[in-house]
Image (cartoon, rainbow, N blue to C red; front, side, top):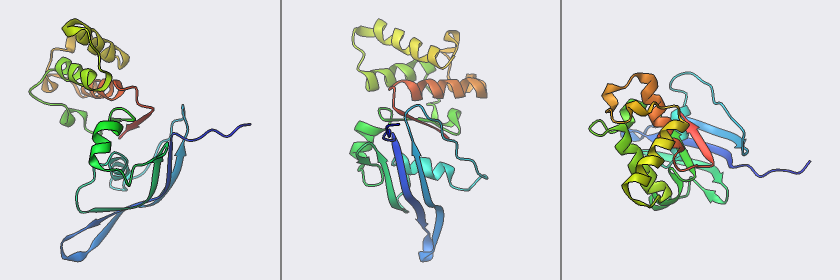
Length: 183
């Protein structure tokens, strides 16, 4: 049986935080795993064990006091060595989609779900053809996540927790990223 290259290959990923006074706190130690196309990998652990920190490391979203070690290869790109420009233009939304742990907190509170979807569709897919094409693409993205079309013009605070989760999932799926992280 032929070997298939993993979409993501993590080898020895460790994250430490430098604290005031020089102390270092280990958040992730020597994580190792591969994820192949079509495969689902679940990381299970207690609250505070480092699952979200690992996801943040893969997306280049760690705070300035974080130190990483190891490798996290997304194809040929080492995510632990990538710069912010690479993450912003190439990785986030295009190669890795994120469904955040607290979706309501990640949605912009003063904008409707529709406007957030339309903006994301325009940025990640380059849909052209005017306002109508953008609107239709946003509605199609919502439908992929089973987000009800009659709720698209609501603001995040008007959604239940489950609907906020569906809105965040719709946003994460827009770019058809080959890797989806659900925190």
